[in-house]
Image 1 (cartoon, rainbow, N blue to C red):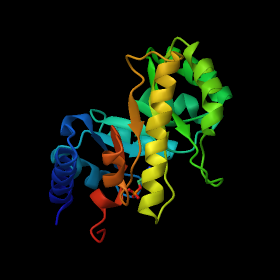
Image 2: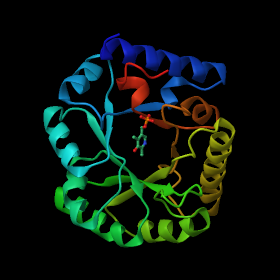
Image 3: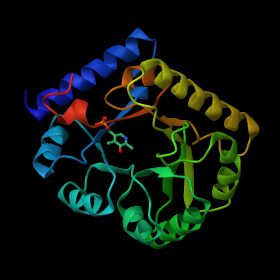
Image 4: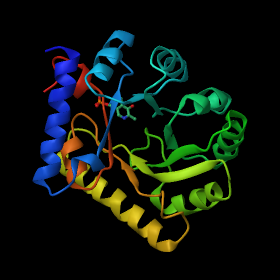
Length: 227
Ligand SMILES: *Cc1c(COP(=O)(O)O)cnc(C)c1O
């Protein structure tokens, strides 16, 4: 299968999973995580209808953004302070924000770039090796973000433990409940704070069934031997 065929087949599967659980396929965005592939593969996926791409390293983001500036680029990787001014101008949405001291830097970089930066708050689902803020610490970060005029808080992101579909499902359900709780507390702007970025190649079905609005998928789109 070509990348184009693989992307189309994947998107069709996503649509089917949505319909089977009573969701509108238009409510689930697929971010094609292109961190392991080159520009040629990205262009093929783009021609097949992929509009959103995700990268986890600033240098790759800059290079690939230049190759396909008309796509929407998502930053999904670890954020280093000194790279924020590189990441912000190229990112439609930054998924992996969780440090309070990064917020004012993102705000300043967005102001310089003449944009409002869309961000998600990354929630740590219990694995110390991963990034993210603990759920009960999220309220403070959100309140800090809310005061910054060049940041738009769009929702939450998490990474589930791999290799256990039931554990992944419960992690996704918890993220949805946290979003609902935050919405009901009135500490965010309800109009924007709706997104749940959750689900990767191994667990995107569970994520959609639990309410994901954005799935981040690498291997299932770009790797020929993923099943
Ligand atoms: C690599 C990566 C993905 C995609 O992983 P796959 O298992 O290849 O689908 C999603 N989210 C983040 C944060 C990643 O780093």
